[in-house]
Image (cartoon, rainbow, N blue to C red; front, side):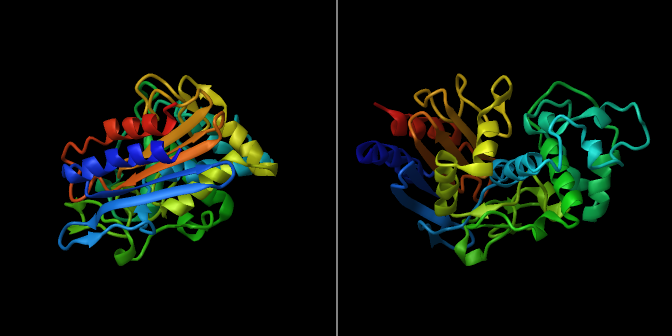
Length: 331
């Protein structure tokens, strides 16, 4: 595995040397807990340069969906607190409350987990106001146009609201797993984008505009180090008890390439062509990703700050993820 890891890391090093991404950290863990981690490049380029390190905190972006929200929802389901096939209105009775026949009132937890709903893929909630409570109710009461089922942050914003309702507090008051947090000190974090809306380079605060405006949400906002991400991968590989039940659902298809929260292999997916069919994975917009191969008993993560200082640049992250994964899984 050391040779394969070295070859995979060389691809990351090449991307950094070519100026496609500022920096990144590659990590691998097996079921016995053996780890390999290497970092290269810069945690920040502007307005000043800082080197990256193995203990740098990353804005994990949509990995929040699978590292926090999905396990929390499955935990609630295993405890009998919610029914995955019940509509969200079982926890959020005021959802689309002005139209009892609205399709939104029939959406279930399982459909949201598997992105099998008609919500739009993206929507700029943050342009509709700065009051997080008002924006939550905008999500709940908007008459959303129904389209084809696509990957949508709205699914996980709604799941986050359900978690908040059951907990009686905002998501940012709910502690994530050990090793994760809802932000990081700027000098310990990888910088993301210069945000035109906020007028600054973001570092240690959430990159996702909607999550920022909501002051915490189920689709983004989690920060973590490579160590914490690998901990999750290892824990999934060796899961027992209630977490094993949750992991089984994470591996169980909902529809097509979607499981409960995660993706499974398909042609052209982020985990490359050589991972086993018993692999699940997910990526984050800021340049993050985690894959767990249960057949081969290992997990790997590639964490980068590819949106720094701007997303409007071809970082090559899609091809890099696939190539790195294929090196990790080569025979």
